Image (cartoon, rainbow, N blue to C red; front, side, top):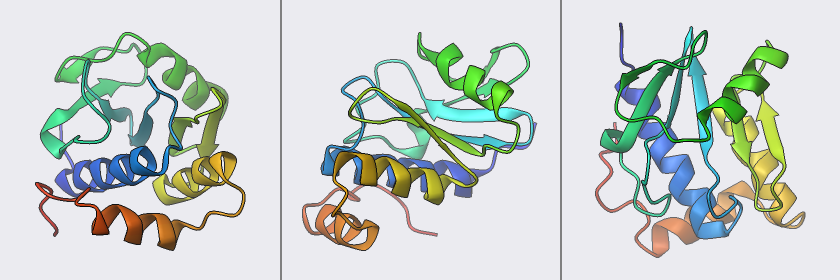
Length: 140
C-alpha cells in the first residue's frame, strides 16, 4: 500500500484550519479518499493538534484499518463515499451535517461556509497560522 505523506500533511493542515475556525462538529472530522483508502483522524485525536502521524488509513470496501486505529464513527464517512462515487473528501460540519466535495480543499471550503457564510478560506488559513495552528506540521 502506498501511503501518500503529502495527503496526510494536507489533511492535518486543513483539519487544524477548520478546527480553529469552529467549522467541524465537536466530534467531527474531515477525511480524504486516495484510490481505495480513506485518510481520517485516528481514534481520540484532537483536531486542533492533529499531525500526519495521527491519521488512520482505512480501506473503503470493508473499513479495515491499514494504519492506525480508526475512529468509532468511520462508517458514517465511508457510507458517503460509497453513495457519492465522485466524492474525494467528506467532513462533519459544526451543524452536524455531512459535507462532501470533489477535492479535500473543496470540501474544506464548503464546511467552512456552513459555519459562517461570510467566512473565507484565505482568512481562516491566515488566522489559524497567526495563532500557531501549524506548529509541528512539516511543510513540503
